[in-house]
Image (cartoon, rainbow, N blue to C red; front, side):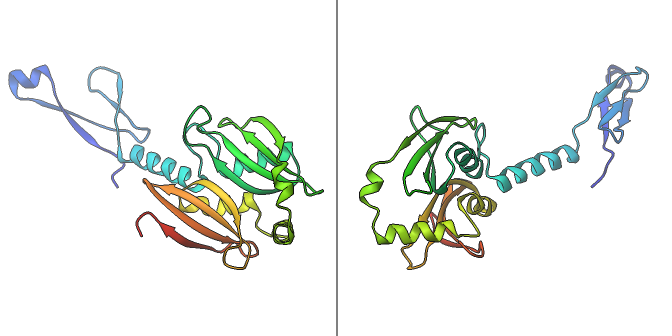
Length: 210
């Protein structure tokens, strides 16, 4: 990649006598205009590289434009309501669009829903009494697996963020072994992934492109 870009500029003199005035960009992205003592900003390939790096960083973190990521939302919810996060879902329409709903199970087994705004602020928390009716042996086994997991909801969201913007994280035991089911969106394509509780290994379940 060339660090200096030479830009030929036609001046009024060029129109009259065909003279072409050229100036070269300095390393700081500016260029001196001959005979004026002033500098102008020159757009270089390095500026494009910076934009590409910024986009790549956004993909790695999973941060939505103007909002917090799934991992950040889980962390905020757990600071407010300590326990085990079992799911996090991004609201994508209506007045709550951009906010997160995070489900947390406390040490005594009670479940709370914690709402986190797109700015990372807790909007409120409420006890999920309906969850008490479903507290059977399967749910207890799932909760126990999540409590001892090396990769919790926060870590699973970070792992899946390498695949796109995370929009949902949920515990799943459909395959007979509890794992995290994570939904991501990238370039308009929605994909589902499984993240192992013990190793963090991520495998794709399905995609819109399938």
